[in-house]
Length: 410
Image 1 (cartoon, rainbow, N blue to C red):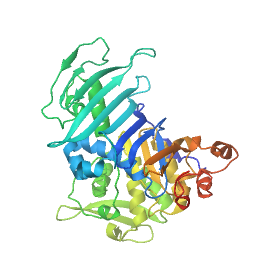
Image 2: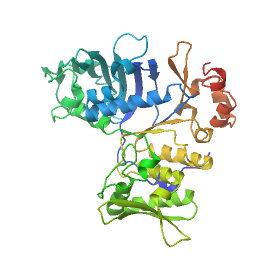
Image 3: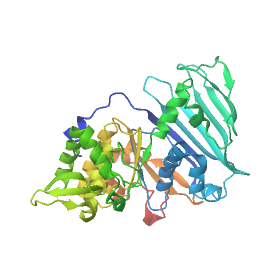
């Protein structure tokens, strides 16, 4: 396994980021009942086409959209209950996650249950729970049903604190998103800020070639259509960080000299790539797909103030296989400052990943997604101790499941 790049190692977190430790999903498409336990700062989803990787990925995108744009937007955009609820499933769609704001704080459990009502989606049940102290009894400091509920205010809500009834305007409003806007609910506000900050990438190479209106943007959009704006921002506000990105890009793209976001007379930005042997730069629309994709990933991973959660789907597309182990190590280094979820089909990317970081997905005989941690597959830990690489074990069929040539199951 290659050593993490020194430039990446130099980027250390100002403080420990929030961490998701557990996720449970019920009745969401092929995820009839799925649990992701003991999540690590870098988690990789592995499995054949149709196994449910993209659906798990979309869980995080759905929640982020609910908090950023509202439940109805996220619900309707995905086809409402008809397309979202598990075929043959009974009851609401349920999301439950356990996370820590910081290592010194207790685990907080967030539970959200959504169903279709007579006028659209509604929040059937929503609550926040934690336990003060190692032996204390868990208690809910926020609890809502269809827009009606109560919450405990204060920095460190306790079981004896008074719960105040705070009705919401509509049953399709998410209580954490509403109450989290008020200073008297700091724990609720922290969760709202956490989920709203998630970055789930649906990078489109064609979008990165566009010519957006000029103006600095601090963060890359989900599709990458503002790549030139982010380059402009980094050039103006974080030139040293931009140079680090270019240094990494030059190691992977032969003879690349620099990337510029030039202001055009009509007020738009033009992204240009300068090759060392030539005087004139190459316009982004004529630049290779792999160069733009690697640049986009580096911009996300080297973000001066990264999102608290980053999702990347199939990073191997358009990239040379030999670049993937280094990209995996950069993801690992970035996980010191954020939490990453990556889906992949690449054994080259997988070779730099640890068994406890991998979740293997497959569909059972009923068509529902099942999840197994690679470290829990018999024989895999022993192979790894003997010096085997995880990607090679997967290609050789040593996992015993998640193989498209054996009907994907165990």
